[in-house]
Length: 368
Image 1: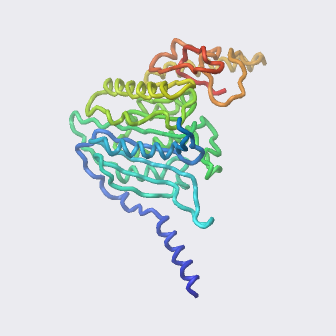
Image 2 (image 1 turned 90 degrees about the vertical axis):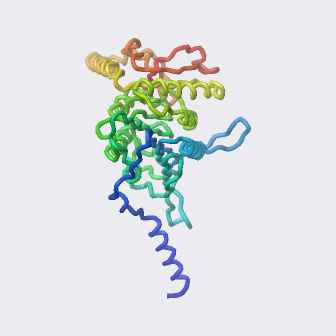
C-alpha cells in the first residue's frame, strides 16, 4: 500500500477513535459535593435558523450567544453544578466524514471540569446521550436534614410541537422531536440523578407558542414550575443571567418568589427592546391541574356536541392563516376565571398590528 493509502487509513482511524464516546465512567461513583445547592441543565438547540440582527445590524447567532451566556452563568454561580448541552447542525469533513454535532460542558462551583464533543444523532428523540452525561457527572449530594438541592432544566430553541415533530432537526428530518419526546427526556434525567420520584423544581421553555394546556399538562409531572410563552418568543429573549442571583437557601415559597423576579427581569428587558407582543407565564404545575381538567372536559363536551349536530365548531375567534397560537380566552368553552389559578403572567400588548389594542391575555395559548 502506498503512502496515500496509509494516510487515508490513519485518517479514518482517527475519525473512528474520536467519534466513539468512552462510557466506562458511567460505572464510577459520583463525586460527593456537600456544597451543591443547585443543579442546572441547559439544552440549547442550534440545529436550524437562529440568525438575527441586532440594532446595529450585526449578525448574531442566537444559539451560540446563549451558550456564551450559559458559560457566564456557570462561571459565576457558586454552590452549583451546571450541565450545558449544545446541539448543532450536522457538518462534514471533505463532504463525507461527519463531525460531532453535540458539545457538552460541565461546571462545578464555578469551575470548568470537562468539555467534550459527541454525536447527537442517536439521541435526538429522547436526549439519551445527554442523560448519560448527566448520570456520569452529577455529584452525589448526601441526604442531610435541611439539605435542599434545586434542580432546573432550561430548554432554548424553536417551538416544540405538541405532536408529530418530523423535521424539527433539519440535520435529521426523519427523526421527530415533540413534547412527548421532551417529557421522556425529562424522565431520563430524573432517573439519572438523585431526583428520584420528585420533580424538577423549575423547567424553562424559551421557545415560541409552548404555553398551551396540552404542553403544560404533558410536562407537569416532571416540573413544579414551568415558565413558557403562549405567544412568539425568540430563543434568546429570556436571559438566564438572572440565575446568578439565585438564593443560596430557601423553601418552595422562596423559589416561587425568585422565579417571579426572574420572569419579571426578562419581561422588563423585552419591553425595552421589543415592539411585538410580550407574554411570559409561570405555571404552578399543581395549582393548574384543576383548570386543565375542566378545560379538557369542556373541550371534549364541545366536540361531542359538534359530532351529534354536524354543526361547525362554536369558536369565537376569526380564522387566521398565521402559524402559532391564539389566546385561549377566545375559545367558546374556555373558563377564564379557572385559567387564572396557578399562573403568574407578564403581558404587554404589541405596539402595532391587529392586536395593538389587546390589553389582556389569559396566559394560555391554543393552537390555531
